[in-house]
Amino acid sequence: MATDILVPDLGNEVAEAEVIEWMAGEGDLVKKGETVVVISTSKTELEIESPADGTLGLINVKVGELTTPGAVLGTVH
Image (cartoon, rainbow, N blue to C red; front, side, top):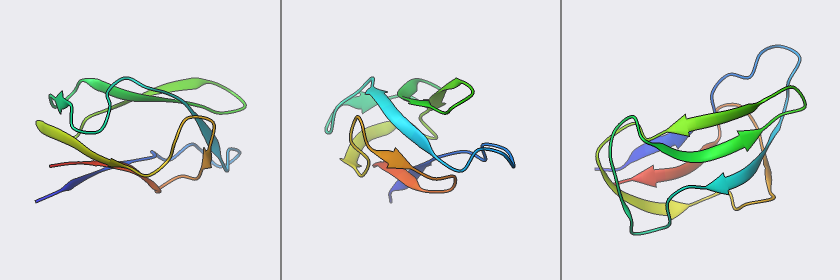
C-alpha cells in the first residue's frame, strides 16, 4: 500500500511552493522521519519527511516545478 508524501499547509498567505531538491530518488529506500524532499516558498525552505518506511515510488513533482498545499509530491511503498 502506498503512502503519499504531501505538501503541508503553508499558511494563509502562501499559495505555492517550488521543489528545490529531492534527497532520494525513485526506488531508493527511505525511513519514516527522514528528509526526502526540500521545498521553497516566498518565506522559507521546508524539509518534508517520509511519512513511512519503504521505497520511494513515483515522484510526481520534479525539481523546479511549482506545487500547492495538499498536493502529492510522491509516494512511499
